[in-house]
Amino acid sequence: MKSLFALTVFGGGVAHLTLAPALRVADVAPDIPLLVVLLLALRHGPEFGGLAGFAAGLLQDAVSGGLVGVQALTKGVVGFGIGTLGGRFSVTQPLVQVPGLVLLSIVEGLGRFVILKLFHYPAAFGEVMTYVVLPQALYNGFLGAALVFALAWAESLRARTS
Image (cartoon, rainbow, N blue to C red):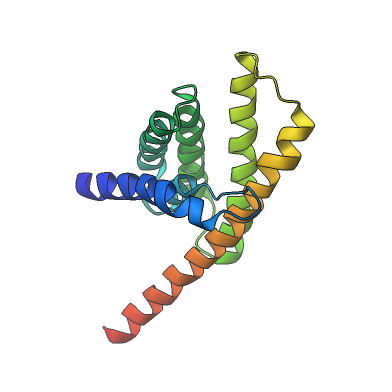
């Protein structure tokens, strides 16, 4: 379990550093560590999701050079929250996971904005929502849909072979 945790969090960070710039469309890059955290939280529960979110966010903060702890806090809270909701609701269907991913991407972006505003971040709310949070949430939704359907396809292949 520890090796799975380290591999997925580190792999999500490396993918964010290497793949996100290549996947950038019109200055919008997906938040790959958030996708990894959400999928881990749905599969392994709130504690695992919160810890994975905190570790992935801290790794992302350390590499980005910004205010250390903002991504760690927001991704940790989102990971814990989705892990808790995943245990209470049936979120195994891709048609539930993808809109939930978009919604949680927006919530994580808003949380990040609120924390940065506490430190007198100079951007306006409308600009951040229009040019950063909403485009990234939609991009995360498209990428997450592809990932969720690929995982469902792989699981169906595994079920057929066994």
